[in-house]
Length: 98
Image (cartoon, rainbow, N blue to C red):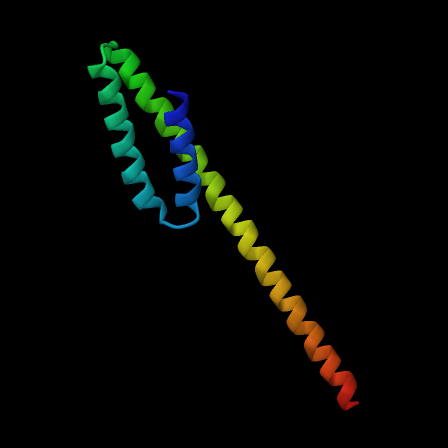
């Protein structure tokens, strides 16, 4: 269970940086249904299977939001570094001309 949760979290964080929210929602829902089905087939009650499916779905959604946040922070930092370096180059060229 722990390894499955870890794999789901890592995949969700990576997906947060790459795919749209609706596509991930469909993917996460299918994974949660499949995970709940596997738990049910292994001999657990229906309530336990539904609970496990919801737990993995929540974990995946938290991982997706984390990936979206981290991706946004990295993009913003790259954009700021790019604009700062472009500003430094233009200021240096103005000093040479003046």
